[in-house]
Image (tube, rainbow, N blue to C red; front, side, top):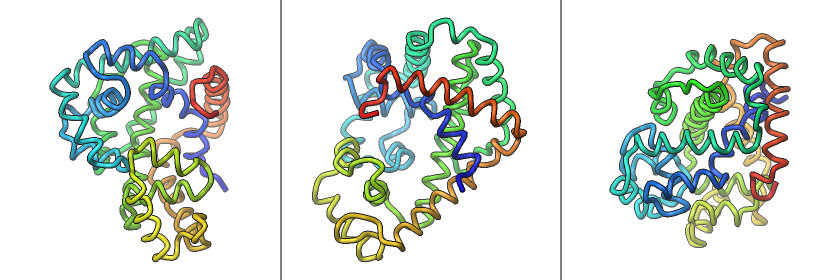
Amino acid sequence: MQSTARFLWQRLEPYHGLIYFVPEADQHYTALGLDPGMMGYFGSRSAAMGAVPAEVIVATFFNFEPSRVHAVVPEVWRRTSPEALWTARLAAADAALRRLFGTRLDQADIADAAEMLRRIVPACRPEGRPLFAGHLAQAWPDAPHLALWFGITLLREFRGDGHIAALTAEGVSGVEALVLHGATGAVPPAVLKATRAWDDDAWVAASRGLMARGWLAADGTLTPVGKQHRDEVERRTDELAAAPWSLLGDDDAVWLAALGKELSATIVAAGTFPGR
């Protein structure tokens, strides 16, 4: 049975996740002197933590090949500042949301949803949650549609930090987590390998290690033991993310899920996410 935390997160996630795909993001980041692509991604997502070194991004982003991060991150902070990148990220989200939704953003339910998230975020403790903690230190935007985006962003990073904790507790590395994710069939392994910059040797080595643990079959699918592990990580992630969502009453949860479904459908229908 799917948890409330996961269900609500899935309904709301595209409203946050669009920032990684919309053209407005690269437009704002390149205006600061960054190259298109990973410079903007690594810099804008980590900017809330300050001008952190590559090692911190390797740790907190978890599943990117480390040399790719080291090749990009120092140059990001030579060209711009965390403060400028954070401002650019908000401006990009604002521009993309206004393009996708227009006057829909001015309706009262957007402000109501933002206020609802603002009420539940204090249940998220920052201990052991570095990406969440960095974002928590930022000011909430005044515009309701941006406050909603920011609230969802906070909850996303809170959940993500917990997911990494669950994987780490199971002794799973970043590349192994990708191999296991690919083995579920949700995303083609080739896409995961390419977008996180892992070469064939590293991918094969991780696969062999998971086979030795009995989690991965020779055909690249999950074994029953591997599925059990995967399910446990997801269950633990949901448990670690549950605190804020548990503050919502049933009626509020149903209402927020319906709004999230509507907003997400608009974002997906616009072709925002490749392959969807």
